[in-house]
Image (cartoon, helix red, strand yellow):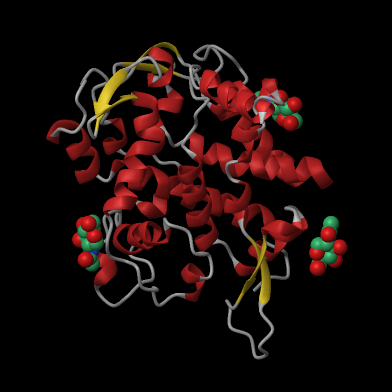
Amino acid sequence: MLSRGWSALAAVLLCLFPAVCAWGITGHQIVATIAQTQLHPAVREQLCHILPNYTRYPSHWPVTHSDEPHTHCHLAVLAGWPDTIRTHYPWSGQLHYVNPIDDHPPHQCLYGETGWSSPDNVLTSLVNYTSRVVTEQGWERDMALRFMVHLFGDAHQPLHLTGRARGGNDVWVRFEGRKARLHSVWDTLLIDKQIRELSNYTTRLPSGRIESALVGKRFDAYIRWILKEGLGQPAMKGEAESAWWKDEAADWPACHRRGSDDDTVSLKEPELDVPEYVGRIERDKVIHKQLAKAGIRLAAVLNTLLLPADAV
Ligand SMILES: *[C@@H]1O[C@H](CO)[C@@H](O)[C@H](O)[C@H]1NC(C)=O
Ligand SMILES: *[C@@H]1O[C@H](CO)[C@@H](O)[C@H](O)[C@H]1NC(C)=O
Ligand SMILES: *[C@@H]1O[C@H](CO)[C@@H](O)[C@H](O)[C@H]1NC(C)=O
């Protein structure tokens, strides 16, 4: 009991430092699950050569002639892992975010070798662990994939890309009637609100690819909503035309910059439940889009890295 009490206390204390409370576990699981829906079936199987057996699950997609299910491994099971080991691996703490120098977005934002305060950060570690998924073996490769899945998420949480006010941890605001740190509004509270308020998309989409990656989590409906209305998946006659990101999603894996990415919301507003802040985030689907982008990009990289040469 005592040691549990202490680790809870340690977790609370750690949350005083920037980015320690990264996208809550839900955000990371959503990104990983969106990626899972986009993986080639052979890549889903490849994951079982890297991740531990408890990430395995039976899947009836793609359809087989026999009743035997395929065995796939799910990226979401360990998506939150790098946050849970931060106390054991103190060196890994700074890999979850980047602090650019002279950082006052949106006016100035310098990255690159002279522009960040530490060369060990979310951008360099993303490259580090992505290449280690190819070069390492055994436990090192497993760990690299866990970090890779996690860091694709963190790199899409806007407050992980600013050191200002310690990534928003020093900014106290009010959200849904409660006092909260701006950082945790973005990490968890906005996502939880959106999941809670969604009442549709409780029924399965006509897509084995998507449904075989949804394994009964409270955010399954939220993911269907994002895929269906945001990306037009699965494609149905005429409907994809009206998807939120129909004109840009194909460019996400290539990291092309779009004008709308530069829209940054003010960090100074104390009451966030107002049309100019939460209203605008929800109207512009800012959170949905960051989660979708992270998942699509993660899947694109894994499909490139891990697709076996003989896959069809
Ligand atoms: C994982 O499952 C596979 C297939 O069922 C089995 O061959 C392997 O021994 C298992 N590995 C461990 C560490 O249990
Ligand atoms: C790269 O990965 C290794 C192995 O986990 C780690 O020791 C090192 O700190 C990482 N560096 C960065 C910048 O991520
Ligand atoms: C599903 O719910 C969301 C959020 O409440 C709403 O914006 C959307 O229009 C709904 N979609 C359908 C097809 O009812």
